[in-house]
Length: 78
Image 1 (spheres, rainbow, N blue to C red):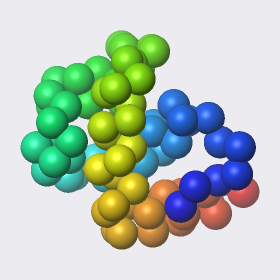
Image 2 (cartoon, rainbow, N blue to C red; image 1 turned 180 degrees about the horizontal axis):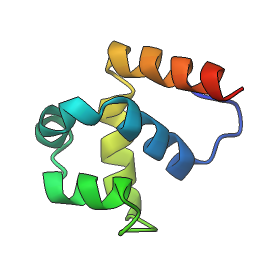
Image 3 (cartoon, rainbow, N blue to C red; image 1 turned 120 degrees about the horizontal axis):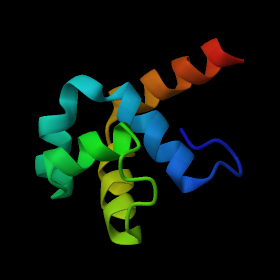
Image 4 (tube, rainbow, N blue to C red; image 1 turned 90 degrees about the horizontal axis):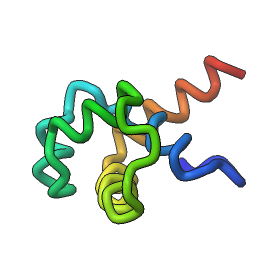
């Protein structure tokens, strides 16, 4: 689920949080190292490279469970 006008980094953090138990799968599918995913989530890496962000989002947007979890998180915070 894409929230209109949501910055990519905000979407990435939201989707990573929703898929937290699946990060090994996300790492393999996106070809982004697991350690990089954890550092992005923990905000150690505050401004990830465009290619890294795009690879992760391309993969995370294909996971239907993540989209549902992201939607639920958005509804809870509203």
